[in-house]
Length: 398
Image (cartoon, rainbow, N blue to C red; front, top):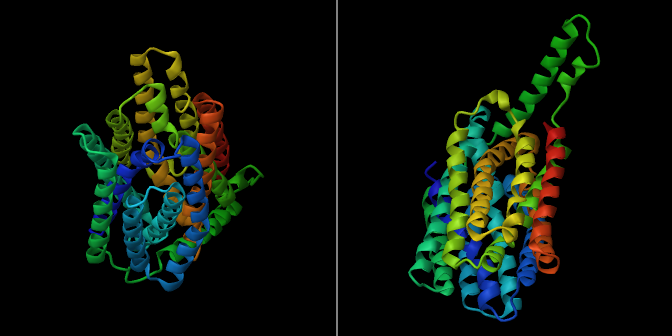
């Protein structure tokens, strides 16, 4: 997977931007606020949803996956450069929306590239490998932000650093990314699942005393439940994390470098989680997804107690929540990505990104709105409820 180099540089850039942009909008741009940032982020993500379908359809229709990856990285680099040259809030919102639209263009071809490069039995290993390396890039980006801020560099300088990293992702992908020689693995998986269902049916009919309860063995996975679960899980995650940098800056009066460090701990624990996935037994299947959603619904409530506790305990609660959420997210992401490639048909590779984008967009808007108008604690409670809804949906899917 030499082609991962370009994606790692891309993740470094966006790891830096994940904390940088909300602080950039709220602290350095005239008229910027948490609600304004939420509106910008939500608008961008909503607009990216139909484009997720479009990119997924086009890359499968043309079978030119490399082209859309290069298009994504090149466009993001140019748009980030234009973003750094402007201070008008409306123009910045327009540019950020364009960045998100082109940023999602690499997601469907990337998933297909992995699925068609590896056999079905290797999918989880391949997605784990991809997510681990790119999460390492995200961690490096957050660490870079911490170091640069610690040494006194401005937020504008960090934005220029992210542009350079994005350009490196394009150059590396030009050299290393190639289209798969043959496109057939996902089709084979569909046939394999159908044959497996017939085989299980024949086995049941050959038994004595077949009853309605034994017919449960013939139940297919529920794609609709997976889709609903993806939306609610993404919504809850976005609702929690979008206003979080501002929460730390206002409620705990933390410096920007410290906020970078907290998010770095979250990503580092996620990276550690990927190493634990390598030996996950196949018998676990997709049954762990709903357990992760339930656990996350409890973890997001921990920061709600931060304003009620002394500073040292508040930091412990914050670190515990971020580290635990990052660790279990690794298991979730690999499981749902692999499952989505199994149940989503060819030509609709962008559906996964679109569903995640739908939830993310709603969360980007509702999280800051609730936080600024009612309070951060209610944002965390709402996020917990959405995780519970995703738990119910994933349980029906598995």
